[in-house]
Length: 283
Ligand SMILES: Cc1cc2nc3c(=O)[nH]c(=O)nc-3n(C[C@H](O)[C@H](O)[C@H](O)COP(=O)(O)OP(=O)(O)OC[C@H]3O[C@@H](n4cnc5c(N)ncnc54)[C@H](O)[C@@H]3O)c2cc1C
Image (tube, rainbow, N blue to C red; front, side):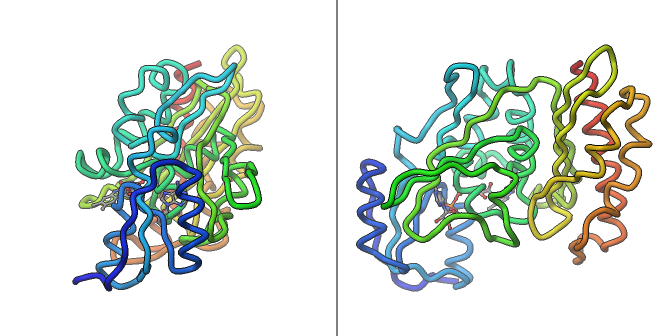
């Protein structure tokens, strides 16, 4: 289908994008890679009057070490994440998850900021950033604020982002003992069930764990029962027992032609076990 008519402006800076958002009011929308927004416009599920293109904003692009944290700009593409030597060495979970998104075209255009702001229930990166305990930075007319990734995702396609705000970057302390496992939908590669795990290990025993699920429910979220079950467990031997009921802990589980509720609950447990085993193998 053809989208409704809209105006297009390319922002030259974050300040200009904010000014354009203010000028456009509720009819204005940011455009990054366009791989979620344009399909929605074609289906007329979104009908923005003004598109503000931030895809080319270099000030929001790149993966950088900042002190003992890693900072990733919002317009960094999935392909850039996958190719980042810094991530591959210090936080491989993010590079590996990005490498599994969609196909080459999606990875070359889609951005981390767009993925987080859009919050598709099957998106991979929200779970990974929750497991990494990332902080999401947002800027708007009234200044800047930071939200923990675990609090950012609220419901289906719903996040803690107001009209007129821009997600600028994410930052996190790098964790090597972390991994992501997903059951992909075969055509799109979106997660039917995906689990991200970050562990603190000492002599083969898990001392702390952050576990997040995507794909199975309305939005990415932590799995506190699995986190508790992992603490004190010897890994990988104890992974299966700790993850056994992972899918049962979710209040609401998606069901569609790709998988029933029962199947998705079962697959959450399988993906959790695989992610824990891979994370533990990194020691
Ligand atoms: C065929 C196909 C397969 C895909 N497979 C997968 C997959 O396997 N896994 C996966 O995770 N994703 C997948 N995706 C989604 C893909 O990763 C998208 O690129 C991503 O979800 C959105 O990023 P974008 O940069 O394209 O955002 P856009 O489409 O440009 O924007 C999406 C939304 O976010 C808003 N937005 C964008 N940037 C910002 C910002 N910095 N601040 C505030 N709001 C912003 C826009 O206004 C819009 O509402 C797939 C997409 C397609 C088309």
